[in-house]
Image 1 (cartoon, rainbow, N blue to C red):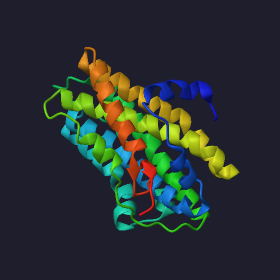
Image 2 (cartoon, rainbow, N blue to C red; image 1 turned 135 degrees about the horizontal axis):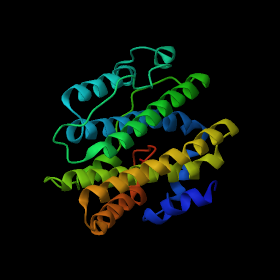
Image 3 (cartoon, rainbow, N blue to C red; image 1 turned 45 degrees about the vertical axis):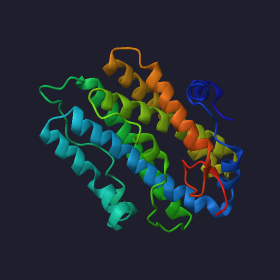
Image 4 (spheres, one colour; image 1 turned 90 degrees about the vertical axis):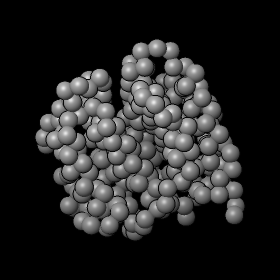
Length: 254
C-alpha cells in the first residue's frame, strides 16, 4: 500500500478497513465504469457539502450566491448533461472573493478550509471526467448509495451540535475515500494507479481539516461523538450491501 506514513493516522481513525470482498468486486475491469461514474458524482457531492456548510454557517448572502454560481456548470453537466469536457476546462477557479457573515461565529478558518476543499474536489471531478472520456466510458446518472445518507441520519438537530456532527461525518467520508483510493490503486492499470495515488494527500488533508474544525467549533471534548460516528461508518462499510458503489458495504449478489 502506498504512502504508509500518510495513511497511518487515517487507518487509526477509521474503525474498520475496507472488506476484501469490496476490493475483489471493485478491481474487476467490467466494474470500472461503475467506479468512475460514482467517483465523479462523489467529487461533486463532496464539493457541494462544503459549499452548503459555508452558505449556511459562514458567508454573507452575496458570497453564498457566488458559491452557488461556482457550481452551476458542474451541476448542469452531472444532472442535466449540459456542456462538455471543454466547457468545464477552466471552471474550477473561484474568481471572486467570499466574505463571512458579520455575525458569524465560525470565522475565516472554516471559509479558507472549505474553499480549498471545493477547488480540489471540482478539479478531481474534471480529472475523472477526462479519464472517462479518454476511455470512452459514457456518462450515466447514478443513484446515491446508502453511505452518506446513513451517516447523516445520526446528525443531531440542535446547533451548534448539528454543525459539529456534519463536520465529523465529513471527516469520516474523506478518510474512507483516502483509504479506498489506496486500497484500490494497486489493482488498477498504471494510469489509474497513479491517479488514485495522487489523490491521497488532498483526501488526507480534507479529513484532518474537517476534524480540526469540529474540535475547534465544539471547544470541548467530542471524542464520544467521533466514536459514535466511527461505529456508524464502520457498520455501513462492513455490512452486506446489494448496491455496489465507491462507498458501499460488503458486496452481495442480488
